[in-house]
Amino acid sequence: MNNKTKKIIWMICGILPSLMVGLSAVMKLSRGEEVVKGFTAMGLIDYLTILGIMEIVILILLWIPKTYKLGLFLITAYLGGAIATELAHGRPPFLPALFIALFWLSAFIRDSSNFLVKE
Image (cartoon, rainbow, N blue to C red; front, side, top):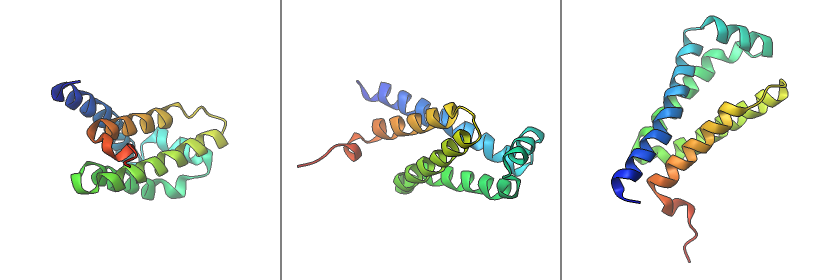
């Protein structure tokens, strides 16, 4: 795979879920009606603002080259929590699982040496 193709795939796999997580953060911070309903139903309304702030901070860390590994770790943990929450409330965790897969694929394409064992 040539570098241009790698860069395009990396950008798509990284930008698409980043935009969705960023939109989620904006909806949480602006207290969008649907988000408030959903979080109220789950009993998590008190955490709405902090979760929105966390999403923004994690995305910033993910897109700063020197901190992308920390950002990847944190977005994985955050979305893992989203998966657990969805499962606990009887909903399919399709989107958080898809976003984790896309973020990790993006990280692998960006620098596969992070995932390979060196002897």
